[in-house]
Image (tube, rainbow, N blue to C red; front, side, top):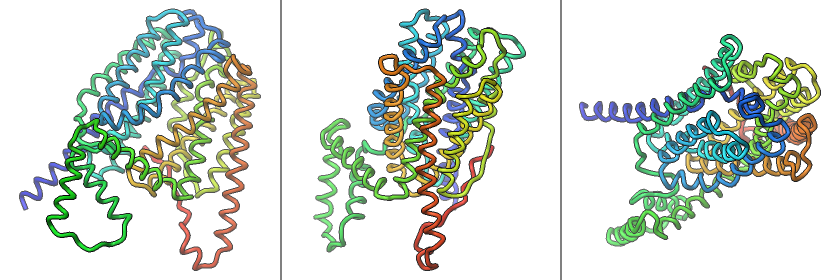
Length: 467
């Protein structure tokens, strides 16, 4: 009894410590007080970069760099076992605000976009880390804490920034220096994280043998039980292969095999493909709107001559919670998002534009939470991590195509209003696709026989996480 109690206490503390430390990191890393005021700072006297240069030259560099880094960083994150990439993210966050505070000139801001692409590409390590150091039964609870820490950090940072700008009249430079101090705390906290002893795909020692053996047994028909010597010989052979070196050909081959198996398992379900398609399409449009919304706000009401409330708007977006029914919601809320983007593009009122942005971002955040849940509920952790990486890569590829065609000065180089009209049209197409699919699914489910309904997956009521 004493031994059992000791083991339970050990398991509890083993998940509480890394979850607490990583939540603290998530809070400080996302508490970027200056982020809602990035465009006014770059356009203002400190950097003196024109809106056209930001729109058609500088911001597209981040998109291209992010795409180049994403997949190699995804594999490197698993290979190095997560913690080093979290430390790297903290370091590049610090570098990001050092450049913003102290580096003059367009070349420095160009390098800043590449630097920030490293920050965003390493975000995958934040959630992947915790799944490698805590027991499976604590996954859901730990994920809730980590998401809460990120959201609270972002909301607090945006709110503090708005207070400092509106009430204290603080200069944007000093807001960036405050943010530099906060993200420096995140960098220091990252060193407190314990080093994981395993990864998902680059298995260490006996882990790879056990994982491969379990997968092979799950996918092959029953065979006569081998004698003890035969089983031992097979096990020894596997163990010899995985012990022959961390970067050995055998380990790389094992990782490739596990990646392929996870890929096949993930996308063999039409349910997962459907939700992943929305994830990729909607995320590419969302990131594009998020990247350029401050330019739209500055176009409607220039920050040099008006009071701005960017931080307050971002804080409100973070606090909105929703509830929704099933697959049809993807089309309905995509339509609402399209309308919100058209409102932002066509209005001359900054308050109407703010309202449109709150509506758009809230819809996206609600549905991406539901989509993540729907996908994760049907997959193992390895498959979910791979699906997350692939969906993000597809989304970023689509975003890169949009940027290269619509935004980049080497192509169309359109003005900010025309860009947002195109983004609204993009979401209108998504809404038509998913409304059609959702309506068809609802019709089929309604007219199915009771026996067929039981065989189908039920439509679930999913609620967004509340704080």
